[in-house]
Image (cartoon, rainbow, N blue to C red; front, side):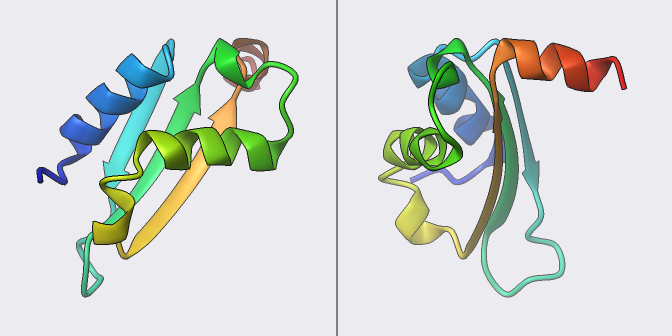
Length: 86
């Protein structure tokens, strides 16, 4: 199984129909694989944070058992636009 930032990014983008995905490999100073992700998808519209995170977790169900630390930020396109204006 490939645990690269690019492989995770492609899978999140494809399965969540995301308009923007950032995946940062933060493994450098840790003992095991670690990633930080930002996912912008209209599939998050009307969903609370926990449901959004569950969508991401289910998308990466095969990969997560092999990841030591996983940090995620999930935004709707509207929220992403507002963040970009800050």
